[in-house]
Image (cartoon, rainbow, N blue to C red; front, side, top):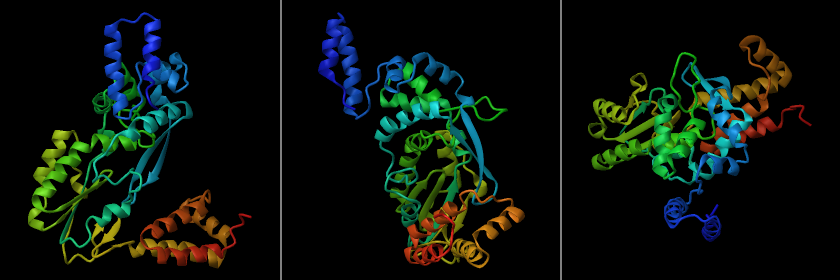
Length: 350
């Protein structure tokens, strides 16, 4: 979305704008255009770009916390994660910000989550054949990123204050009843990119430490991994210090060390030693789901799941295929065998 510089100059002169006005606005526009970012002069201009009535946009900003549907999904290690999905009017505006602004901003090369052509497998491969592995976790990652950090991020890109204020409000919300804080909703299209951009300084500091100490570093969202010689791994006190200075907190309950004699060395749920593998229990549990469908039929198995575990059959096929697709990312030969079995089952989809 290139800035039409000559057209802007002609229109400004027609309206009798001063040379000082032209100089100031063109410097602003050229700076954004030079970074590949859309040139947006004001909230009113932004409302035209997103094809939303200006007064409605301001209203949307003021009541944005009410424009989310909340869901809960199970975490891999127990507990539930709150997912807040914006309703369509807010999502349209957020999608513009994400697609045309945030997607243009580089993230640190050691960030692997929410990045095109990178995956959880690429993140794990960084730590293959390393002597020791240290996994750490950021406490309340998305809720740690408040509206002030988001405002500062847009300001650092070069946008004017009133636009940055509106962008920050549109990308955050107060989603906890007892909290007055506005933070990134986990489920908004803007949150993944913003979290990576905001974490760039943490990534830079940890990467510099790793290079200096000849160890490996990677980050997948709030999961951070260091690997190498044990004596070179960062001390917990150092990690606490960096997180505190950057406005985050170490989740000390999830700190894990894996040594050379550890039977299973995990990085973001994958086994890492001389290669990257899917844990056997994940493959076995997926295979068992297929076996139950083979033995009892799909409808009978879904009825059993609903009766014994309260799990409905909505999107069961998609859920199962998603598990096999995950296996396929890491171990294609295992996945092929599972796909073949699934394709022989009568799913009643025709």
